[in-house]
Image 1 (cartoon, rainbow, N blue to C red):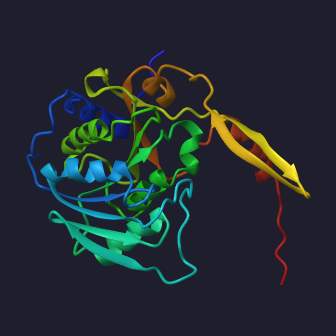
Image 2 (cartoon, rainbow, N blue to C red):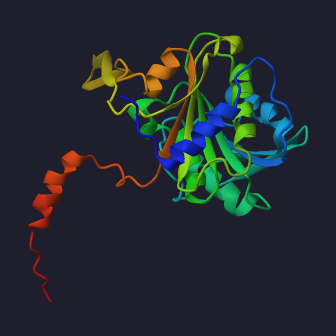
Image 3 (cartoon, helix red, strand yellow):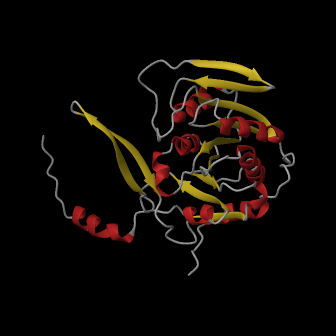
Length: 290
């Protein structure tokens, strides 16, 4: 059975038809874009270095990212202390190294560091996939969501972990998507989560609009040591088999770039099964006390 497409998905489907994953580098954008780049792996991570370079052909690039690795911080914010910002110029690109969590880096850049709001915020390229429910833990996704909160179109970009990860190839794919989006490709109230498979550039089979797989991964904890009352465990996880061919996990496992449309109204997607809970809550009576 085919999924019924919502209006916002129709817009993104049009983008996917325009974007190309061929081997050629992205051509200059028909319109010059102002692009903010961030991440959660830190300002010197190979993914953000490759991304900033690839996006330069599309317009003006500014980088505002954590000064160290902040992986797994989700949508956490830094609000309990002063925030140090170090700025530098690299080949015409302004770089801000910020002592803060990724979502705060984006908000600080949008509200204080940039002269005007950019056309798009691109968070990544993350070292490793953010698929299924793992996206809730991702600070790469959190940084993109923060930009969307502030009315700026945004996308999180992730490269599935593998030996010899080719960030330059992933950056070229990302540049094509950004060029196709232009200034208004992502509707307000939404943002994109992009996952790129770990295959050579010419091995990418295409782009797919996907839904987020909603099943949680299998978590496990390996016992490392136990002595003097202290026990150490190494955490890890693996994805389940994909729930279907329309999911993000299936797409990347089969050589496709996965593009999922995310929103931030978490009540909008409540399943029909929640109706029982709602009916029970409606029966509650609350007595106001003076």
